[in-house]
Length: 207
Image 1 (cartoon, helix red, strand yellow):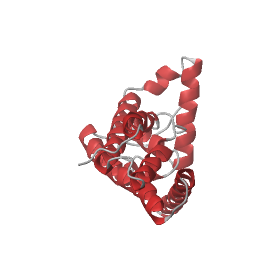
Image 2 (cartoon, rainbow, N blue to C red):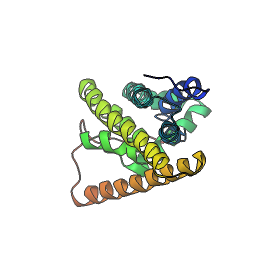
Image 3 (cartoon, rainbow, N blue to C red):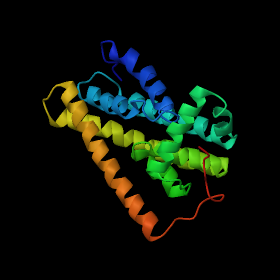
Image 4 (tube, rainbow, N blue to C red):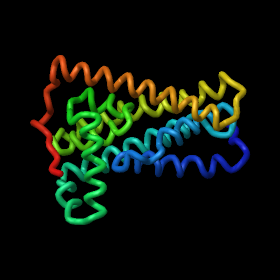
């Protein structure tokens, strides 16, 4: 396997890993943009495909497990003791209210494609005491699909057009947002028509 020349192979992987991990507790972190950008760079031969996917997968899994264990341990109560913690707790609460509080198996896998949905589903799973082994399997499944999908978006747009890097990055991001919006709509319709059972009971977060 030939290693591409240039600085990207040294900067992309650690930066993307960090952003994807941080995206779990802080949905504003630009993880999707970093992974889609990696796919676009792949189209220009500046990165290595298995490493791009592995980086996105590892960051997604690590962030999921971190957030899950924190909320399973009652971190929201601790956060409310501090001003900065209350801001973090409010951000998670807003994500829960936007993406829904379901901790069903399907939500843990699918909600990560919705803006803020990863935070909401993982926090809800932790609060509902979803079994750790089950959560790890679901997180690995969702992380694999997400990493392949986001990398594929950037790679497809980069290969399909001769546009500059940033244009392909914006194009892939817009497609990802549209798909996420469609998934959110489907989940919302399913929730209204037939409420899904919750693993471990009803989940609530105190303001």
